[in-house]
Length: 190
Image 1 (cartoon, one colour):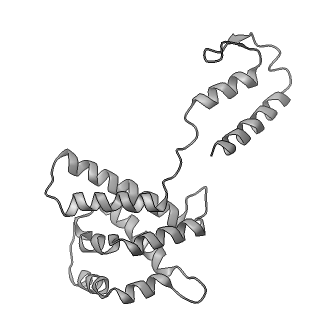
Image 2 (image 1 turned 30 degrees about the vertical axis):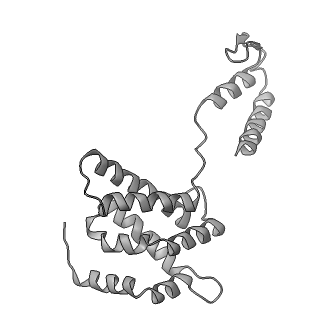
Image 3 (image 1 turned 135 degrees about the horizontal axis):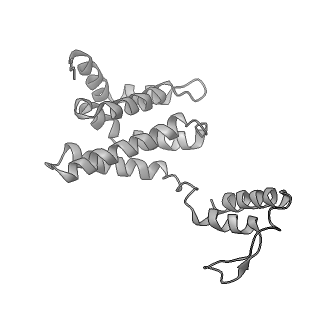
């Protein structure tokens, strides 16, 4: 991550140095952290950019996301909690599902990385998250249902060679198929 930041700052520095006349006309300023005069515009700008939080935090690994999601689901559906703890759990559920969706489906700026998709898929197969969410789908907010549906659809359509690992996994887990069939028989309208 720091290598990308250094490359970005280096490229930005080169561009700014090429701007004619900007750095010569500015008054020297003192940088509080370095205690040295900062004479040109590009250096001052780079120091400001490095202090700003323009760079996103590192993305959590698929294993961390699944572990966090499992603990959130435990709080939501297996413990008798209410109030702030429940609100925090629903917020964490939303964040974890959004992180999973960005890994599985990508974002506007990034395509999904096949290695992360494979890791996340394996973590989901190992945990019982799919079972838990499907059993409690009626208790989840609409937006979270949409995220989970997109994740589940992406998983189900995923192919490796001629095989579909999620379909094979679902065929082995008869309880998930039962939950899916029972879900079609229940009609819940908001």
